[in-house]
Image (cartoon, rainbow, N blue to C red; front, side):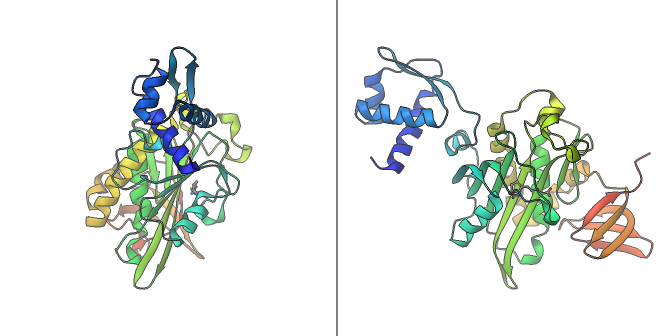
Length: 333
Ligand code: BTN
């Protein structure tokens, strides 16, 4: 058996065992179900143990499934994933510099739309505006998705808002009522950042080659895990809920929500999502300053339009802004 066949066999073994967790499957039946020799079942078990599955092995009774690992492996992400295209091919790593860089490389080499890259840890996780993204091992979700939209490059900026809506729709399952989007691509819970989006575009004038949607979610970080400078501004789901959250379940739901939003974005941009964009917005009606490149503007946020642009009421009139860094000036009264 080559490596791919061994991986495939271990996947099939795990899927079969988890149909009846806690129940022993007899050796002979298992081998005949998987259509392999008994010795090959052993090989698959070794691999499953390497992947950190908890299986109980008994010489007479056989094998039983005890627990899946708390890891974003391909087998786990695909188990029960409800999407048609997004995440159907998973490149899962233990440690990488940046999942966005790996996904860009895959896209340049021709990887199709929907391929994702996940990592348990990033050593050079990248945030917006050249910042770092804090990416400690086995606590967060570090994910990059390859998209290949056929719409023109000028419609790409709205993809960040689209992703933010899918992310907010996902996180409300764990923290209803308290999730907000800070335009264009930060997610807040209780006024602290829980997730960020880094969308990177490869395009020329007449078309998009690919878009890498990078998403970092603080899931199981404890308060003390964050470096001092982030402790007051960043949070995690665990910090908010005071319990651990199943990262794989969260990731699967996010991919499902993102696929729905992406389908809708391709048809009508943000038209069908605008009610939720407004509902989640941390900025609508707020007095803000906005830095885009060397330009600094001040005004009140009037609207977010169907292309994801921010409409700002300034002293000189309404301005449509597609990118920038917003700071809220006045707290809501
Ligand atoms: C931000 O808020 O500044 C955006 C953060 C984006 C972080 C994610 S983690 C997965 C992907 N890989 C990266 O290097 N960055 C994005």
